[in-house]
Amino acid sequence: MPISNVLTGAHGSLTIAPLDTLPGQDAERIAATYEIQQAVGRVTGICLRINTDLEEFHEIGFRHVTSLHEGNIHISGTIDRAYINGALLALLMGRKAFNEEAKSQRIFQPEFNLTIQMVDTSVAGQAELVVNGVKLENWSYSMPEDDFIMEQVSFKAKSIDIRDSESSVPAVPEFVAIDA
Image (tube, rainbow, N blue to C red; front, side, top):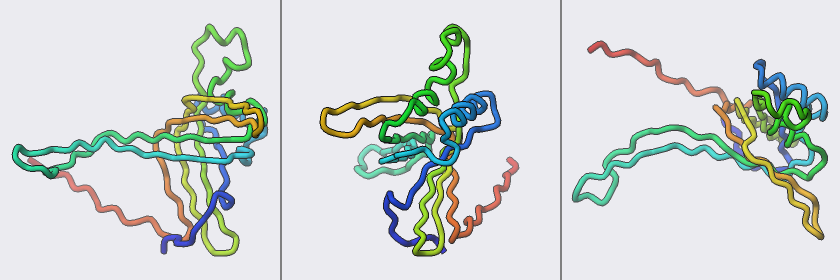
């Protein structure tokens, strides 16, 4: 049975998991340096977007769509965080943020998985989204006169896994090749 209770941001946490690749090794070093293996601290907002390039087909003389064709899937999002250290900027820049000599070398941008977990301890179950193959795209820093210093990063990702502890994975029909 899917989770049906209402959750707030207070029930959520954000963690990162470096991948077992060269870009993942850089992310792992940065996560260890800034001690963000357990949770990305002081996050105030996470926005996750999935856009599909649906293409509409209209026939001449008809106002409504006749057919929708699936297109590419784009996964992106933003994270707002109360500024504490340069961890997110380091995850964007990689070695180039630390080493002057690295600026002239070909170095991979760090890559990692983001886990967004929502747990309400008063009810059974939890919801979890694992955003795979994340690379940070943009970073901004805001220092208002009378408010908290904030940073924001935007990211793109390769895929998303849904893990609800109260629900089972729906059965996917077998694909059968049709011989021509």
